Length: 444
Image (cartoon, rainbow, N blue to C red; front, side):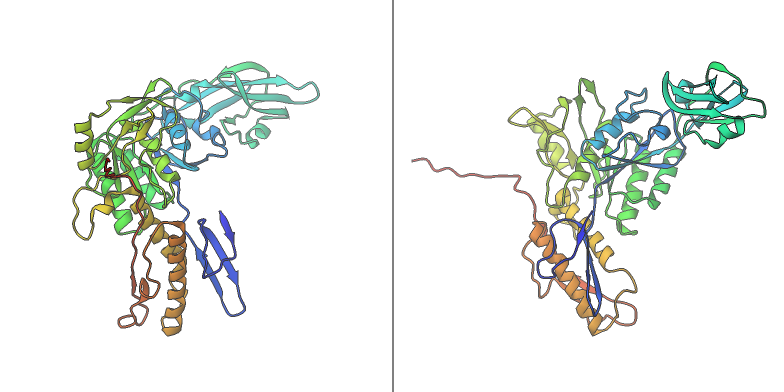
């Protein structure tokens, strides 16, 4: 994250936390750092149940022990595919295994063993015990025949258990003895039910994220997701959006994806491409639009739209893929599902770039104006207005907003601010992208 000192008159372009230490007071100016994608793993065959697992683009396989696979593996339920597609652009992906089955288990070598987590992937785990040439025993843990962990010179089962292996829990009261190999069996999967996914929607309230890929086609659950996103945006003050397949939500917090692509010859469903859309949205700055952004690795559009279908889809708030003039597969128009322009929301609210500006600005306000930081008097109001104008300058210089009136666009309403209540009046005009270009050519 960017940091260091800042000049109040110049501001900074990069998001980050910037701190000045001065003799009279300590000012902190921070900007919103966005870009975290959240994905529920529905039908995954291994891992801790109902636990959030964070995966970083810089080390995608650091969570192998909890996922049971490399992110690059072609797992049976295509959950790694979702992670891969999101990580093509996102820096951070958080996943949540909505349900887990029985643990695989086995005995041999004097010990009882069980997979760390439930699911049929545990049936691919095995271990061996061999005599150490010097003292004790050597124990190895495998998955599909590949060594995962190795322990040398283990004296007894208690010492083996103390290793707290990432894949297998070892227990027993007997003596260790050599065994060529013991494969765990009995691991099972369970089918996720609506209550499991509803639990995920409740649990995600406590997690910091920006974009949710929700690969669910059940309309009841899609509606529940919209309600949760609306609550987080409107009541909890969190600037989040969800990407949902084929769901006309008519809400700026929901991006409705209505066709899909083939990646490396594999046809993805609309539900699966929500991961890529969430990732590319997470990667976009509040000065970027994803209109005509290319889908990396895509080689075919599944159910491409005709001109008439494309026009109708845009009018109904759909995000879909089309071919550019160069034949690339791109996002046609970076819009969300909002189509009813009322209650103070005009057509600009359908543009995801504009929503990114609003959400990032809101988070910047939350970072810089926590409760109980400033005095609620003329001195405190002046300080707050100064910080607010600096934030406006940051956003204007970054190209996120325009036409800033520094005398009037960030003011404390001094007529009604009293006691512990402070009221602000803020003016904000986001910059959109030039996405409809009209040329008049006069021939001579």
